[in-house]
Image (cartoon, rainbow, N blue to C red; front, side, top):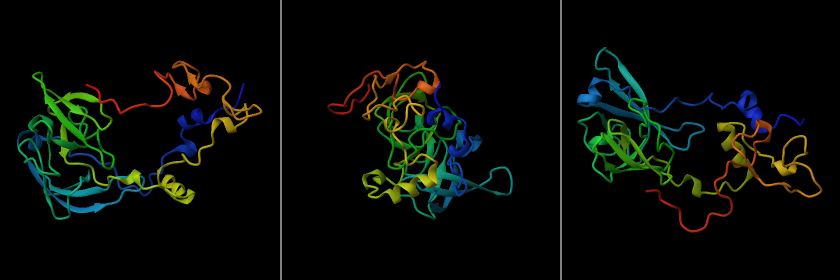
Length: 253
């Protein structure tokens, strides 16, 4: 029996836990309330901030609480083009302008949106990373809306799910090369212990299923079945296909 491999150790947490000390908080829509379901509520963008370990900037938006004398401070994923001092409107009756949050059933087909809810009231799950967006493709008769996700995949979600108008800010981030190891070190220092990554073929047989041998080679197919035991489950897991991706990216219908 070999050693407990890296993939198994990651599940337990420990040194592999994410580095959250300096993070600003979870980026979410407002909690779904009466004001958003039937009308709209106005908020003001107080500041646009960097969140360590996240590619996209965040916007701190202040709303007046509709029920108590207090200010609700929300953290939104910042779309491209918003600025401090801008008024944002959230709700069914909000206008179709960048930064506003409204149900996708109220948007015309072809609208560019981000931070889309997958289920009603989950406060945002899809198209949240820098430069990404989803597109409203079609409204169905059964109360659902078809979206085109950043991956190119089509997805049906409830038309009452909310989304923010616009593209997530910070686009083009991956186009700039890291250039040196120090930049990769600092990038992952803010995220989690995931770098540097030692290749399995460079290890000994005790450490990894790909280890050992007089040359660095895997020695057996790199595909592995879905129900393989955890210590064996490395490589191309339950691969539908292998090899190079040829031609243009398929857009699913």
